[in-house]
Amino acid sequence: MGGKASIILVMGFAMVLGFLTVNMNRFATKAVGNMTSYHESTVAHNLALAGTNTALSKIYQDTSWTGPITQTYNSPLLRGSFTARTYALGTGGKLMRCISSYPAATGQTLKDTIEVYFNGRKRNSFSVFAWMTNFEGNVFWITEDTVWGRVHSNGNLHVNGKPVFMEKATTSKGFDPKPGTGVNKAIYKGGYETGVAEITFPNDISEIVGASTTGGRRYTTDIWVTLSPGTSASGDGMAYIQTSSSGPITDSISLADPSFKGVILGNGRVNVKGTLDGQLTISSMTDVYIQNDIVYEQNPLAGSSDDLLGLVAERNVIVADNAANSSNCRIDACIFDRTGSFSAENYSSRGLSGTLNVTGSIVQDTRGAVGQFAGSTLTSGFSKRYRFDTRLNDPAFRPPYYPGYYVRTFAISGWWESYRITSVD
Image (spheres, rainbow, N blue to C red):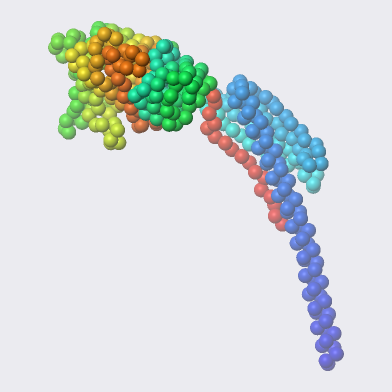
């Protein structure tokens, strides 16, 4: 029995080892196949990525590019191809699609697709800038000028002294003189950049005009607007309208009225002062004059204010030369001059007027002056303290119907990738 048992035991071990050997060989073969399949799928996907990046480069060089662009590789190290093209979308956007092809070892052709969606109508509010101009004229940034927030000019920024830009300063042309040379000793806390694409001003303020006649207020004469805070019972505040500086109140507007669209427009000169409680845009088809301090009921720098004012003029926004503005003037608002400037009336002859404190945003076609200088010494008018309202970093947070602009470069709004899932045996 011992001999027979030994033979049976040896034969059993032989069968088990043979079974294991066969299966190990099979698993090894499958592992090689799986690895090959994974490699081929990855190459097909990477080809699609390469084509996508090539097409993106084309689009950002020329947003009207439609393609197609095709690239074929046929070398020992890389085989396959990709084709990319763009398609117009009904929303004003664009779709870029790239399809790759890779010849697999099995004889089949592996394909992979990437689609990128572009928003061609991305809108920003001008209020995202602490300071912006189309043209700086011959006005210089000087020592003691400080700006918190983004600064941009479609022209040149002139510097004579050591102003401080707390955020990035950009121009479509350049700095005069170049930063760090000559009299340009400016401090750029957020850096600077030149050659930035111009930001186009709107052709009109039609959006405000439309809102003023359908739920807002529009007046055909010169008007004086006095802003008054509300009470705990009434909520948001009031705006009182007069047709002369000392005449009777001809209209009272509750900013809490849900039917009021938040826009007051005058065909003539619009004069403004007071304390705002709520959100409002005051606009003129000519000029807006600031007759006294314009402040929010709640300090916007404290972080809890929901008050927001837009001062929009077809031409100019002007700090009036009067007794109320003879020492200092404070303005909490987003200021927009479509074809004119933000300036101080009679700035060169009014005598020293203290400090002009603006919290919000200033955007103007041509830079206006608020002070007269001899070299870097203020001799008449205001010194400047412009503070950006950081709530305006959100383009959606803007005064009612405040002007906006469309970016020229397509913005990526979506990215979709397909990736071949490797079949593992």
